[in-house]
Image 1 (cartoon, rainbow, N blue to C red):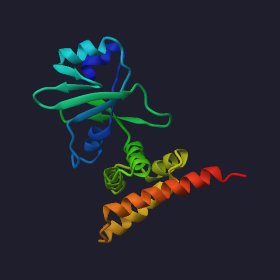
Image 2 (cartoon, one colour; image 1 turned 120 degrees about the vertical axis):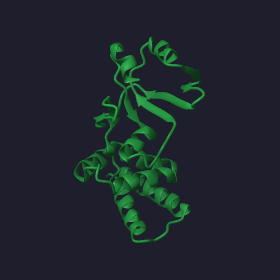
Image 3 (tube, rainbow, N blue to C red; image 1 turned 90 degrees about the vertical axis):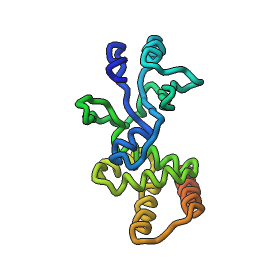
Image 4 (cartoon, rainbow, N blue to C red; image 1 turned 135 degrees about the vertical axis):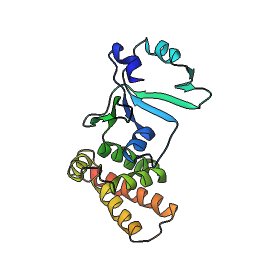
Length: 187
């Protein structure tokens, strides 16, 4: 796809589930392709030429069920894409493992999405995450408490303790309450 839109000045950055599949060595799989990229008028024609059909905000490649969505035109400030080389030799941009972990951490804390916790915890224990950059980015994003809690709960799980889904949701609520209170307690 990158090749099909390169002359339009677009270089998609893979985010979401496909980025997770990349960083987790395909431990997590998805048929949804989320990218951040500009959306020039010609983009629709290019996607149609590749066989995609528009369904609401998504483009779907039938009969494979692969869907493509560009939820945003640019990354958030501080987010960093990294160039990835595929086995085919092609290259593409993928959201950094640290920034992806923080995206999943936000899903857990703000929406109570246990899948966000699981995915962030999985990335946390891989060797693709730079702990120093992760700490800096978490601090920049106001996610220091969330990251500390993720680390603590991940340690419990690694030690063999089983955590129930409700416990993870309650932990997310506590983080949000404490973080919200800290932001508004300034004299």
